[in-house]
Length: 264
Ligand SMILES: Nc1ncnc2c1ncn2[C@@H]1O[C@H](COP(=O)(O)OP(=O)(O)OP(=O)(O)O)[C@@H](O)[C@H]1O
Figure (cartoon, rainbow, N blue to C red):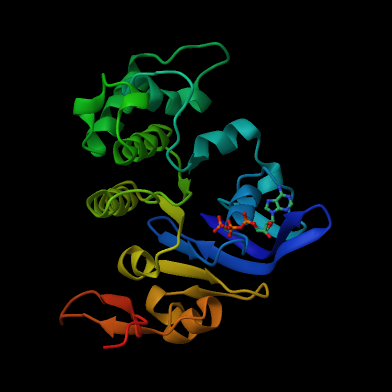
């Protein structure tokens, strides 16, 4: 679905990331992890075509990004920003229906089929009961689910999510990640999401792209690239990776700080 080859990106003459290569197939969930200011948002902006690449190539469905019309791109690539409060008190149902915008003719309103797709996105995320609620009056976790439903209504092939669980309580973090995993599996979507939590990548991603300082990076199965060595080198913290895999089963690893800095 997505192929990135030797990509460099940045602002003006400043290159923030250099020589990034990876690809992403349908049904994959890639977590992008890295310290503050390392270039995660810059990479997203470049993938979304908001920043010109400094070099290298981005291909979507086998075609260079430059060959895609904005309209076709907007139909295929969804973006879920961090939950925000919009200036207008739209109903949740209206916000989700906005996901259909790229599929509508100029000045057209969503028709019955579009509204059905929006309803089904609400159902998939388990938030049909919120449909008539006012978006500005629901909780941060609920807003995040609404934004994911809006992106799902767009019926994209690739979904780019900016820290979808930032500011959510523990229950909502798990709930949002469970929904993301389910839509990846059920809709054969490709998802890239940023997170600051190595455990989120270890537990949920099919692959992780870890950005290091000094423009270095690794990409691979989460357990192979999120290591004690990476956490020490990048964040300057000592952490252990614990293997909780119960055989037979899919690997389950988590990281815990080796030293809480408290002495008895
Ligand atoms: N509009 C801009 N113009 C110039 N430099 C920018 C701009 N936006 C960000 N930068 C710089 O690019 C670098 C990467 O920033 P970016 O926002 O991509 O980091 P990030 O990994 O997303 O950080 P965080 O985890 O804090 O969100 C930083 O040094 C930042 O100062």
